[in-house]
Length: 124
View (cartoon, rainbow, N blue to C red):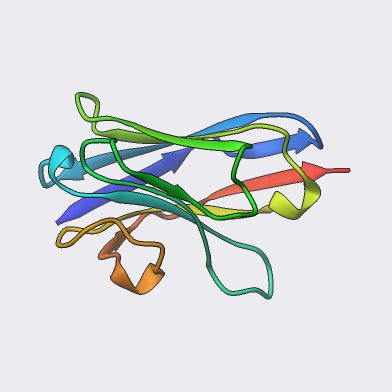
């Protein structure tokens, strides 16, 4: 079992920055890949970024590449999403996810555990 708790969401103006955190507990954090997804009202859950267990392999959605940075601190069992140059279209609930078996993935169906989500709202 893995428990995930996101924090760091909020309201920010366009062009601003936020840093999301996701604290994990349960299984040994350093052994599995993590990812961030987001879901806007009326839309399907969308891949944002993923990172393998060492932090050495990372992938981003094209829509956030160059603006968002995913990282992890295995000693703190935490994954981060630094979001810069935010746009109104980034407004969504952001979820972190853990995949216990297999490589990192951009498919939400491959992830086994999810956090409760944190709201990010970007005003224009």
